[in-house]
Length: 267
Length: 220
Image (cartoon, rainbow over all chains, first blue to last red; front, side, top):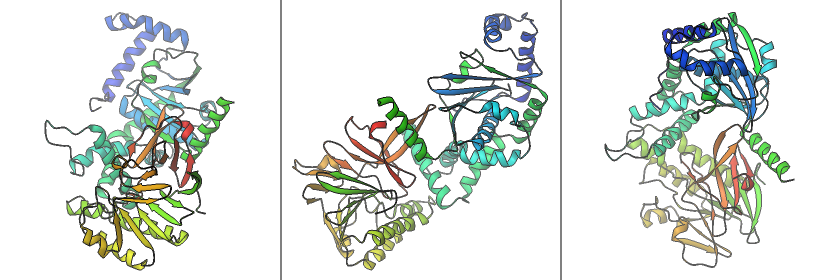
């Protein structure tokens, strides 16, 4: 998991440039030439977004409703942006998201219909209340908890075992997350917990880059496509198993919902 | 009746599952509590890991509220009442014990209860390996049960179950478990982890979710 380096802003800039080269029909590079069939499929099934376009795709599967966004801004920016967008959507209706991302875009997945059309009519990508919304979204997301694991190790709260005699990772996660829960409940001003939130803010949710990215989107034309199948852009994100969570539903309601669904199924 | 609790019938006995992660046996007026791990936060602090001590006072508060509410005749601790050696937090429990001298308290010894019998007796705790009361036998660890005709109710593993809630999400919740061979209680202590169990098809599983007990047997 440590090897998930994000693309830098320079790198994403070059990436977008290459993409646009492909949109313009210039397949002179060997890389673009190889990818040409995939670009064709993307164009066929959805849209190949140009420089001034921002692509959003929505599709349904057995798992529920998927909405894909493609800002091409690198993983870290997507991490922040996805939490932000999920938070803003979850304010509209009680909903639970599972979030996946890569360097090209991110996905929101929910077991119920995501009201993205209604949200797009309002200003979903506005940079107003940005800091408040980010703070609210990291509180509900599990980003801080994941950061806390490393902090826990460095601070010596969890014991990693002697070299060559590694204790399993699972055990480790359980105990650092237990520490996190206990601190959050009984000592929320604990320095190590503060550190976790600060790291999320400064490292993962780089506010300046996020603001820039949102500004760019506001200047682009949003293209919203309902796709029948997962497009070449969407597929790699869809299959990502390492996911974030964000919910505005109560856990007990979610369980009751499941019970109801099951009863319907039995009848 | 405690808010969010659920009554079930096992072996013709009425057991009330409480969202505080304890069990109340109606017919006998017994409160059953498992794996509190008193003194755990203090033990960590002693070893240089600063866990807030409110953890321990919360445990005592939770217990006190239950006792106030139910006023049981007996309290049965299903082992791991204490996490380790005597420390200041264990003393807090002692004080609480003295304040409730009229309630009989029984401890079925758990693997963490390493204090001497003398210490337990000083706290007026009746120490046993198993506590039998028709139709149940209470103990800490089910694997140590001897072939008894009675239905074992145990603690020890801090059971939790995995629920898959739509949109590819999994959640882990502590639970009460009543299977064919034995029953298990979740850990009462707030500073305790949990262990994922794999219930069989007809086992009864009640999850503790946000101060409510809910039957999730069919969801697993």
